[in-house]
Image (cartoon, rainbow, N blue to C red; front, side, top):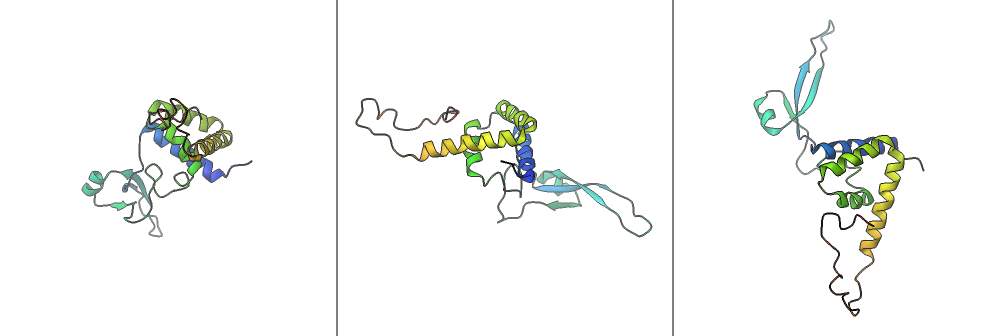
Length: 157
């Protein structure tokens, strides 16, 4: 199965931002304005900025619009955030930056294979969680009926 190149690129950006612990910026400020050419055209280069820096700058624009869906890590790009299988897999990783660094290396070395593996693992996790309740009439079953809520409770699935 061939993965969509745009989706793989978004997954790489997602893993890179998560590994760095750097969420998507909600503001952009002008970094450089090119001088006008003989036709009177000029260009501006924008860079990401925080709200404090944007408030202190005259030339800033807000990237996030209230009421629009927003991914914490990719901003307006919701491809990764809307993929339930990938999000189920990412729940097992949590906010551990060292784990995200390993995932970032995996997705940069073998993007399509990694995407397939993560999607498959996420699908297995979702199916295991949705299978329903454990019977409680077996000794000790009531104690272990509830799924663990620890950091890596779904990692082995």
